[in-house]
Length: 129
Image (cartoon, rainbow, N blue to C red; front, side, top):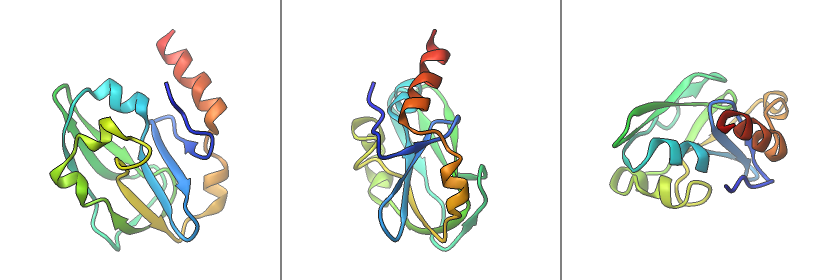
């Protein structure tokens, strides 16, 4: 399973990437696989402030509905509106076209506390053992 090295990860299976002035957030390939075929994504409102670990979005699949939590505190700067029409992008391209939202005003100290790809890989291996 793919876990890109340039991302940071949470135990709830969200990822976050530093894209310069903003931080892009999505769910991991592992999470997408566990959910099955994604049928609906509810995204946050642009301008909303989210706290670290707070509910930010919802994803529904043929198997279940699941909350998506913000990996760090920040302001929602942008949402991936394409997911409203094509939620399957989360399954097809979880790290590229299937992102959920972008944050600005992120607290970098919180970012550094998240797992790197190697630690997340070990975490997932322990879950599936």
